[in-house]
Image (cartoon, rainbow, N blue to C red; front, side):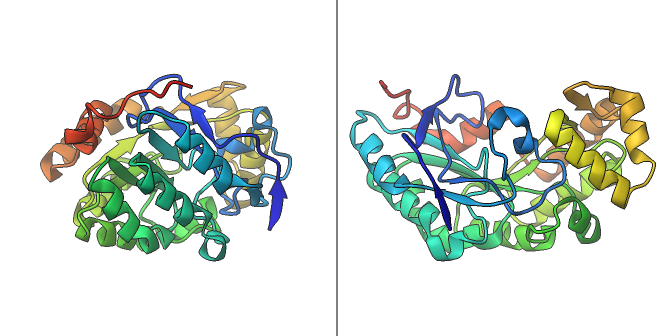
Length: 294
């Protein structure tokens, strides 16, 4: 495992709008899930070897020292730039040991992953949730395993992720899905979106949070278009005509998708609005979790 230097691990968020979290943490750089649409390939993030997972040197010691200096518990997001449950985590256990520190300092955590390895740490999420909020988010962009194999070639299959969600739910852990991106002309059908909603509900998930579209820029766009040319000939030209050089690329069907999605979530008893997801997750902890003094 290659190591890269790190000066700090916790980054204070500008707002708490993303699942209520006030800090973000990435223990690794890069990702080997190979998702063809990943925004983290963009030049602005400065990772020229994104497909190679790198461990941040001294990550756990840095995290311990940063948590020790704080006077109030944080609500920490994990998985914003790299998946905390990449295949190397099975042996490295950086994420597991970080969760132990988070529990020791009575912080909350909101983790996002495409890996069923998250289920290994169900005991820690249950322990943390006794004193602070926990949000376990599994990314599910489609329930079609064959399509996912093209879009997310080295990530565990959606069916496996949903099994992990069911396992977390059985432990009483607040869990659900992020349905993003929804790829224009590929996964932006009503049938696909509703299939994800139903699969999450069937797995005992509590929420689905969507983004009906995607982003495209520089290296990310080039990589995505290259993969489209290989798997879906002619689709690149539709993107170029529809979006040009735009960064935000909403699905042309976004309004229709939202109407069908929100109705099905209501029918299945799932949260789908951010404020309600955050309220349900924080519950009695809300008054305890505020911004740290840096």
